[in-house]
Each structure stands twice: as C-alpha cells, then as structure tokens.
Image (cartoon, rainbow, N blue to C red; front, side, top):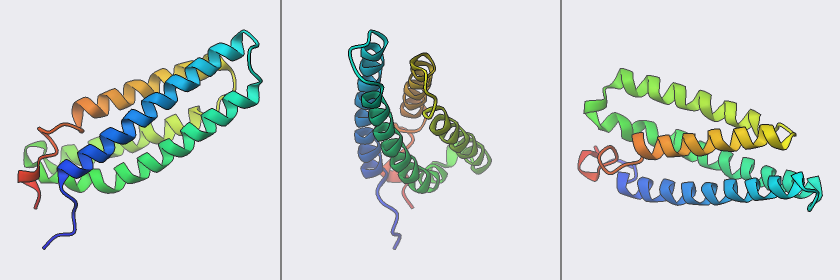
Length: 138
C-alpha cells in the first residue's frame, strides 16, 4: 500500500493555493498602484510582498514534494520529460522568489506578471485532471 495522496486531492489543494496566490498578487498590484500615487507608505507594500513570498515558498515546497511522483505516474509524460519539467519548474520558483525582493514598483509589477503567468502555466500543463488522475495513482 502506498502513502501517496490521491492526485485529485493534490490537484484540489494546489488549485486552492493558486487561488490564494492570485488574490495576493492582485493585492500587491493594487498596493503598488497606491504607492505610485503616494496613497500608502512603502512599508504597506513591502509587508504584503513579504506575505506573498512566504505563501509562495510554502506552496512551492508542497508542490515540489508532491507533484513529481504524481507526474511520474502519468506514464505518457515519460520519466525524462518529467525530470526536465520539474528541474525547469524549480529554477523558475527560485528566480521568482529572488525577483520578489526587488524594490521599485515597476520591477515588482513585472515580477507579479511573471508569477501570474507561471501559475497559469502550471494550471494548464500540470494541474489538470488529465495529468493528475486518480486512476493512474500507483
């Protein structure tokens, strides 16, 4: 008997985390807009970016632990392809974490757009019922 969680449960959990991250990205963008017109103190935006970074780190740790074995169960993806996908994916995670440390709101906006695109790509490529299927769980 395996201790691996059902793919459908991982899919639901990751989708929920993505929804929270999307909301946090939206909030950071709103605060960056407010900062640009001097409606808020920079510390307000910095705190929200720090919250996003913490949430993203927790999400990435969860995803990096659970997603690779589940992707390997989808034999049609192939082990080599999964390995490359995971490696590239982790590199993207690290780059975005570093970029979230940038100070100017213009750079932050580009990072937030990149993060949003990354989450959308995950949702399209990995986090689908066609990839994470309970019938493939081994």
